[in-house]
Image: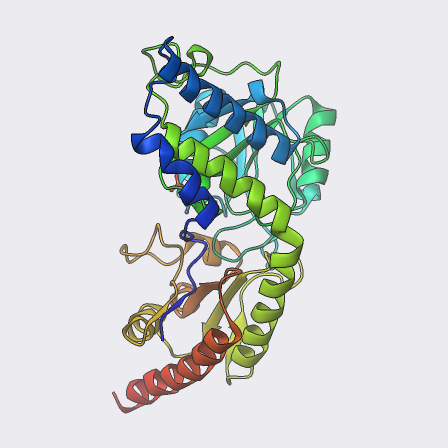
Length: 363
Ligand code: PMP
């Protein structure tokens, strides 16, 4: 059996998104900047996608800028201001892009709004949901504090969009980053939402695409896939989350029944598909490798930091020692997982954990 349970790293493209992008690869391949009929067709498809995406998050179409993904969107946001405050659990595309004061979460991985302090700050950036431990931040409250203080509020909503309700009006969000491949769209495409009235510098220079702010020929097929995937994710969210939550809770209860295992991050304020769990005396990387050999795909730390030997900055920020962080793995489900797959994971994880513990104890 093969089980894909690394959906925070990337998701399988939704079938509808895949079908929708195909005609724009060979049949309707006009450049949306061209003024002939083929160009106009592409332009209309792109603008309709922009409206769909805007509608899904409560924005206006002219507040959506297409980018290559959340990394670019985050970099763009940080380039728009000199003075930023962010958190210790952000993605590397925030933390490596700027040196600035950092707020720490509580030991459950939640940013407590009382801990926010501002001194000559132009922008606050707090992620909506964490990519490693799945914790969901009090975005509305933080957005409200920023608004009252006249500070621009950005959220990296890459793991939240399409998975939990996100609305820029209700949530007091001024800027937002997203990537399509996290919700069943193509890879290498995303968007930046920037509220009308906020000054946004050009990301790079060239043609007049994206109102002159982000030059370069638009990736029409990928944009179409993103809009279709987001609409379908939002429309099916309740139904899909009900299934995912029940599978996740079943898996989590069984894994926590393994002796000396601990959940990382808050259990309640958490994405419905996320488990991040530590097993004493089990190296996370080894567990990932032997499960992979048995057809089960999970992750140790975040996929972006796998391959480097550093322990997760997120797990260390919530107080885990480097050792315990390295004993942690992340399992992120999707609506496509089945009960049989969950059973297969439970028995294999149990087995592999005790195997790894036994070979460690004889060393
Ligand atoms: N932010 C978060 C929270 C993420 O999880 C990721 C992807 N791991 C990114 C930003 C970057 O997304 P991309 O690689 O698609 O640019």
